[in-house]
Amino acid sequence: MTYNKYKNRKTKVDGIEFDSLKEARRYQELKLLVRGGAIKDLELQPVFELIPKQKHDGKTIRKANYIADFKYMDIQRGIEVVEDVKGFKTDVYKLKKKMFLYKYPQYEFKEI
Image (tube, rainbow, N blue to C red; front, side):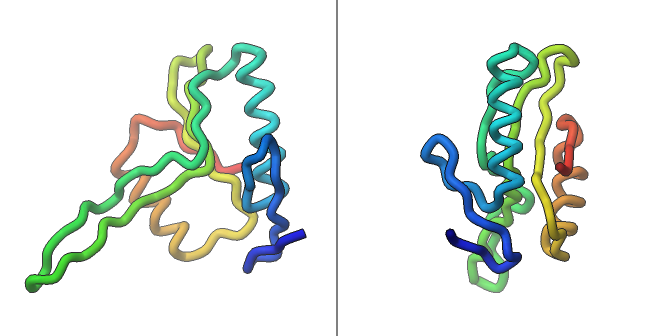
């Protein structure tokens, strides 16, 4: 049994390692929704660029990304949903969430 720095237990489902039991359970729920035809195009760990790579004073500054837990299409409502399963919200997460909401308003954002 492996724990991360926030005391979450790493959990494997379908050969995929999740950062927490809560995230693994949500994955199983989403898989059922896919099978039931409520959602489609389930994607794990989708990456969204928040700030592109840039140069400053001759030095390269890495890009900043937000990595969500899940992304999928809600078939009935016809909208794409991005989900993040959270137990503890760090200051970095809060800032990246604000940047994501500003840059990607086309997605419905859910915290589970």
